[in-house]
Length: 115
Image 1 (tube, one colour):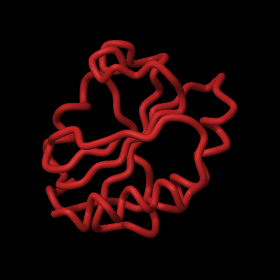
Image 2 (cartoon, helix red, strand yellow):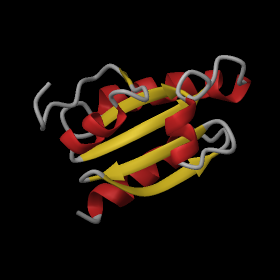
Image 3 (cartoon, rainbow, N blue to C red):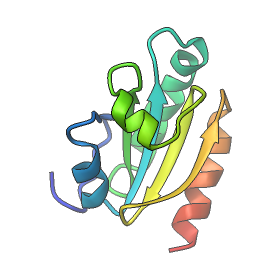
Image 4 (spheres, rainbow, N blue to C red):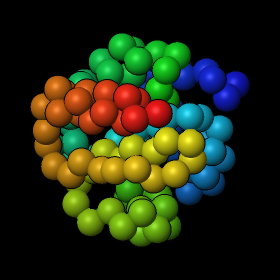
């Protein structure tokens, strides 16, 4: 995967690849979730749609927090779902809780517009 390559499919992040993936992409949106979290499962279709809509511009990824406790702790994830926004390898913002697709899209546009 090249530095400007942002696929239309969600990329799986884990404790081992988190930092390298974040640093290789200009804009990254991460869906932090767990299999037992109903709102997380309800949000997944919207995240997948956004990944397709922003293909080539933004990397959309997901991370199972139950399986990646070190990274979840490092990022201070206390509630699920949590959507994290990174730009140029740096944490920018987050949205916590089950939200509508447009709320995530507005934040994406805000972050992209500020670059």
